Image 1: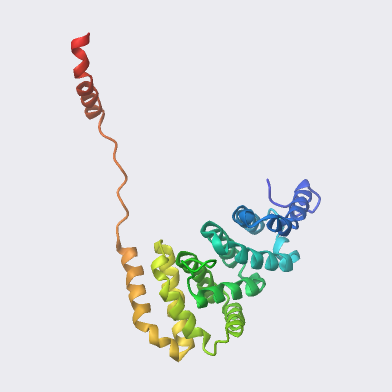
Image 2: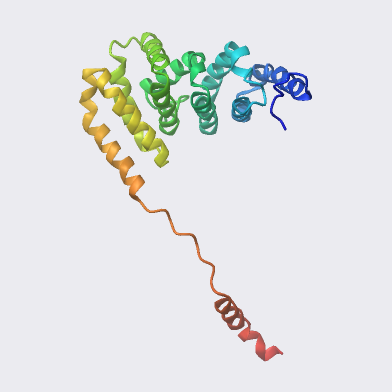
Length: 256
């Protein structure tokens, strides 16, 4: 078994220690180049999943919260021009929020950058900047933080608002996220956005200005749920296969 021994004397504990030592080197890999952002975030996602499963004895987040916060903060910056990198960073942050919501505060600084990017909007055709698809992905991370760790979300949004000089960040965030909703390609993204935006509305009266758009998104998410799953492709019966094969050989019969 790869799970850590509760008796404390097995080789599993040594394996956990070795893996934790390797995890400490992740920031150095990101310093090599932004093209390593995606594989590094996939590796971090693996660590988070196996830490939750017991392989690392639950020591990854407790012992290296500061390192992970800095790593994710730099990864958000590095993924600016890389859509696949953005997806990988968002995936790691989603994993942390789902698997270990108690450790959500370590995401405050990365989430502040995420919220700031969403508030600033897409920069396609304007040089470096996040695309609409990337911002839709980042909006989902912020939305999940709102649902599972509201205090962390509020602190991150407050930091983003201070950096941008915004007095009313909540309604601004609602409108900015809705503006990139067309970039939500998956029904799961639309469901998450609908839940999070619906939870945002009661927090700030001025956010009710986007009520119509939020309701439209909710209807769209419900419509996704009502669609029947596609029927699996059916293989043709053996008789049809034999008939088609015989027909294909007819031009060659005269050569026999």
